[in-house]
Length: 221
Image (cartoon, rainbow, N blue to C red):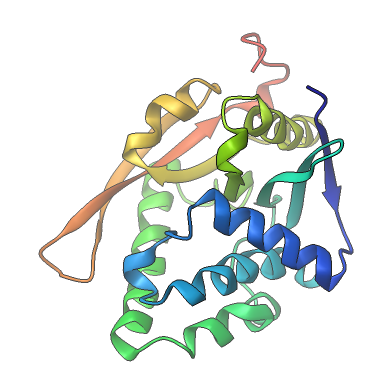
Protein backbone atom coordinates (compact mmCIF):
# COMPACT_ATOMS: atom_id res chain seq x y z
CA UNK A 1 0.00 0.00 0.00
CA UNK A 2 1.34 3.39 -0.99
CA UNK A 3 1.48 5.96 1.82
CA UNK A 4 2.25 9.63 1.18
CA UNK A 5 3.35 11.63 4.23
CA UNK A 6 3.74 15.39 4.16
CA UNK A 7 4.02 18.45 6.37
CA UNK A 8 1.15 20.85 5.67
CA UNK A 9 1.91 24.52 6.26
CA UNK A 10 -1.06 26.52 5.06
CA UNK A 11 -4.14 24.30 4.99
CA UNK A 12 -7.55 25.69 4.10
CA UNK A 13 -10.38 25.73 6.64
CA UNK A 14 -11.91 22.77 4.83
CA UNK A 15 -8.64 20.85 5.12
CA UNK A 16 -8.38 21.67 8.83
CA UNK A 17 -11.93 20.37 9.25
CA UNK A 18 -10.90 17.17 7.48
CA UNK A 19 -7.84 16.68 9.69
CA UNK A 20 -9.99 17.37 12.75
CA UNK A 21 -12.48 14.68 11.81
CA UNK A 22 -9.71 12.15 11.17
CA UNK A 23 -8.35 12.69 14.68
CA UNK A 24 -11.79 12.59 16.29
CA UNK A 25 -12.60 9.34 14.48
CA UNK A 26 -9.18 7.92 15.38
CA UNK A 27 -10.05 8.39 19.06
CA UNK A 28 -13.65 7.23 18.53
CA UNK A 29 -14.82 10.62 19.79
CA UNK A 30 -13.60 9.66 23.29
CA UNK A 31 -10.39 11.70 23.67
CA UNK A 32 -10.33 12.77 27.35
CA UNK A 33 -14.11 12.35 27.26
CA UNK A 34 -14.40 12.50 31.05
CA UNK A 35 -12.87 15.99 31.06
CA UNK A 36 -14.91 17.45 28.21
CA UNK A 37 -18.36 16.31 29.25
CA UNK A 38 -19.89 16.72 25.80
CA UNK A 39 -19.24 14.63 22.70
CA UNK A 40 -19.83 17.74 20.58
CA UNK A 41 -16.59 19.18 22.01
CA UNK A 42 -14.44 16.36 20.66
CA UNK A 43 -13.88 17.99 17.29
CA UNK A 44 -13.16 21.44 18.80
CA UNK A 45 -10.56 19.77 21.06
CA UNK A 46 -8.71 18.17 18.15
CA UNK A 47 -9.05 21.30 16.06
CA UNK A 48 -7.51 23.34 18.90
CA UNK A 49 -4.43 21.11 18.76
CA UNK A 50 -4.12 21.57 15.01
CA UNK A 51 -4.65 25.33 15.04
CA UNK A 52 -2.23 25.77 17.94
CA UNK A 53 0.47 24.11 15.84
CA UNK A 54 -0.39 26.27 12.84
CA UNK A 55 -0.35 29.52 14.85
CA UNK A 56 2.68 31.48 13.63
CA UNK A 57 4.02 28.11 12.40
CA UNK A 58 5.02 27.33 15.99
CA UNK A 59 4.23 23.65 15.50
CA UNK A 60 3.87 21.22 12.63
CA UNK A 61 0.92 19.27 11.25
CA UNK A 62 1.86 16.09 9.40
CA UNK A 63 -0.63 14.01 7.44
CA UNK A 64 -0.57 10.57 5.86
CA UNK A 65 -2.59 9.98 2.71
CA UNK A 66 -3.45 6.83 0.80
CA UNK A 67 -4.02 7.44 -2.92
CA UNK A 68 -7.70 7.13 -3.73
CA UNK A 69 -8.71 7.41 -0.07
CA UNK A 70 -7.32 10.73 1.11
CA UNK A 71 -6.08 11.57 4.60
CA UNK A 72 -6.02 8.57 6.92
CA UNK A 73 -3.76 9.82 9.72
CA UNK A 74 -2.76 13.13 11.30
CA UNK A 75 -0.01 14.07 13.75
CA UNK A 76 0.66 17.31 15.60
CA UNK A 77 4.30 18.00 16.49
CA UNK A 78 6.27 20.82 18.07
CA UNK A 79 9.87 21.29 16.92
CA UNK A 80 12.75 22.41 19.14
CA UNK A 81 12.06 25.76 20.77
CA UNK A 82 8.26 25.43 20.67
CA UNK A 83 5.79 23.87 23.07
CA UNK A 84 2.03 23.25 22.98
CA UNK A 85 0.01 26.19 24.37
CA UNK A 86 3.15 28.10 25.34
CA UNK A 87 2.13 31.35 23.59
CA UNK A 88 -0.93 33.59 23.43
CA UNK A 89 -1.15 32.94 19.69
CA UNK A 90 -1.52 29.21 20.29
CA UNK A 91 -3.98 29.54 23.15
CA UNK A 92 -6.13 32.03 21.25
CA UNK A 93 -6.23 29.84 18.14
CA UNK A 94 -8.97 27.66 19.63
CA UNK A 95 -7.94 26.41 23.06
CA UNK A 96 -9.24 29.37 25.07
CA UNK A 97 -12.48 29.30 23.11
CA UNK A 98 -12.87 25.60 23.93
CA UNK A 99 -12.19 26.16 27.63
CA UNK A 100 -14.88 28.86 27.68
CA UNK A 101 -17.43 26.21 26.73
CA UNK A 102 -16.63 23.97 29.70
CA UNK A 103 -18.26 24.05 33.08
CA UNK A 104 -15.94 25.48 35.78
CA UNK A 105 -14.94 22.15 37.36
CA UNK A 106 -13.81 20.79 33.99
CA UNK A 107 -11.97 23.98 33.11
CA UNK A 108 -10.21 23.81 36.49
CA UNK A 109 -9.25 20.20 35.83
CA UNK A 110 -7.58 21.11 32.53
CA UNK A 111 -5.62 23.88 34.24
CA UNK A 112 -4.43 21.45 36.90
CA UNK A 113 -3.75 18.68 34.39
CA UNK A 114 -1.50 20.82 32.21
CA UNK A 115 0.60 21.73 35.26
CA UNK A 116 0.85 18.11 36.47
CA UNK A 117 1.62 16.93 32.95
CA UNK A 118 4.42 19.46 32.47
CA UNK A 119 5.90 18.68 35.89
CA UNK A 120 5.93 14.94 35.20
CA UNK A 121 7.59 15.41 31.81
CA UNK A 122 10.26 17.76 33.14
CA UNK A 123 11.15 15.29 35.90
CA UNK A 124 11.16 12.33 33.53
CA UNK A 125 13.16 13.86 30.69
CA UNK A 126 15.25 16.33 32.74
CA UNK A 127 14.46 20.06 32.64
CA UNK A 128 14.49 21.64 29.21
CA UNK A 129 14.84 18.43 27.20
CA UNK A 130 11.27 18.50 25.88
CA UNK A 131 11.68 22.08 24.65
CA UNK A 132 14.89 21.09 22.89
CA UNK A 133 13.39 18.03 21.20
CA UNK A 134 10.89 17.18 18.50
CA UNK A 135 7.76 16.61 20.56
CA UNK A 136 4.70 14.62 19.51
CA UNK A 137 1.58 16.21 20.91
CA UNK A 138 -1.09 14.12 19.20
CA UNK A 139 -1.36 11.37 16.59
CA UNK A 140 -4.30 9.40 15.28
CA UNK A 141 -4.94 6.84 12.55
CA UNK A 142 -8.40 6.00 11.25
CA UNK A 143 -9.51 2.77 12.99
CA UNK A 144 -10.06 0.89 9.74
CA UNK A 145 -6.46 1.67 8.76
CA UNK A 146 -4.72 0.30 11.86
CA UNK A 147 -1.88 -2.19 11.42
CA UNK A 148 -1.06 -1.00 7.92
CA UNK A 149 2.19 0.81 8.78
CA UNK A 150 0.58 4.24 8.51
CA UNK A 151 1.31 5.41 12.05
CA UNK A 152 4.88 4.13 11.74
CA UNK A 153 5.36 6.06 8.48
CA UNK A 154 4.05 9.23 10.08
CA UNK A 155 6.36 8.80 13.08
CA UNK A 156 9.38 8.13 10.87
CA UNK A 157 8.70 11.31 8.90
CA UNK A 158 9.09 13.43 12.05
CA UNK A 159 11.96 11.34 13.38
CA UNK A 160 13.90 12.04 10.19
CA UNK A 161 13.37 15.75 10.80
CA UNK A 162 14.71 15.31 14.33
CA UNK A 163 17.76 13.44 13.06
CA UNK A 164 18.44 16.18 10.53
CA UNK A 165 18.78 18.75 13.32
CA UNK A 166 20.37 16.38 15.84
CA UNK A 167 17.70 16.27 18.56
CA UNK A 168 15.77 13.50 20.32
CA UNK A 169 12.11 12.71 19.72
CA UNK A 170 9.79 12.68 22.73
CA UNK A 171 6.13 12.07 23.49
CA UNK A 172 3.75 11.34 26.34
CA UNK A 173 1.04 8.74 26.61
CA UNK A 174 -0.69 6.46 29.05
CA UNK A 175 1.62 3.94 30.63
CA UNK A 176 -0.26 1.19 28.79
CA UNK A 177 1.26 2.43 25.51
CA UNK A 178 4.74 1.20 26.45
CA UNK A 179 4.56 -1.83 24.16
CA UNK A 180 3.27 0.21 21.21
CA UNK A 181 5.96 2.87 21.38
CA UNK A 182 8.60 0.37 22.44
CA UNK A 183 8.04 -1.32 19.10
CA UNK A 184 8.91 1.98 17.43
CA UNK A 185 12.18 2.31 19.34
CA UNK A 186 11.02 4.51 22.23
CA UNK A 187 11.88 3.92 25.87
CA UNK A 188 10.08 5.11 28.98
CA UNK A 189 11.99 7.96 30.57
CA UNK A 190 9.67 8.20 33.55
CA UNK A 191 6.07 8.06 34.70
CA UNK A 192 3.80 9.79 37.15
CA UNK A 193 0.21 9.90 38.41
CA UNK A 194 -2.30 12.36 36.97
CA UNK A 195 -5.39 13.16 39.03
CA UNK A 196 -8.80 12.50 37.54
CA UNK A 197 -11.82 14.64 38.40
CA UNK A 198 -11.87 12.95 41.77
CA UNK A 199 -8.66 13.77 43.63
CA UNK A 200 -8.75 10.22 44.99
CA UNK A 201 -8.40 8.70 41.51
CA UNK A 202 -5.37 8.86 39.23
CA UNK A 203 -4.05 7.40 36.00
CA UNK A 204 -0.42 6.92 35.07
CA UNK A 205 1.15 8.90 32.26
CA UNK A 206 4.60 8.20 30.88
CA UNK A 207 7.17 10.24 28.97
CA UNK A 208 8.90 8.40 26.13
CA UNK A 209 12.11 9.23 24.30
CA UNK A 210 13.87 8.04 21.16
CA UNK A 211 17.46 9.14 20.71
CA UNK A 212 17.18 10.37 17.15
CA UNK A 213 19.98 12.83 17.92
CA UNK A 214 22.36 9.88 17.65
CA UNK A 215 21.87 9.39 13.92
CA UNK A 216 20.25 6.54 11.95
CA UNK A 217 18.26 4.00 13.93
CA UNK A 218 20.09 0.70 13.72
CA UNK A 219 16.80 -1.08 14.40
CA UNK A 220 15.39 0.45 11.23
CA UNK A 221 12.46 2.02 13.09
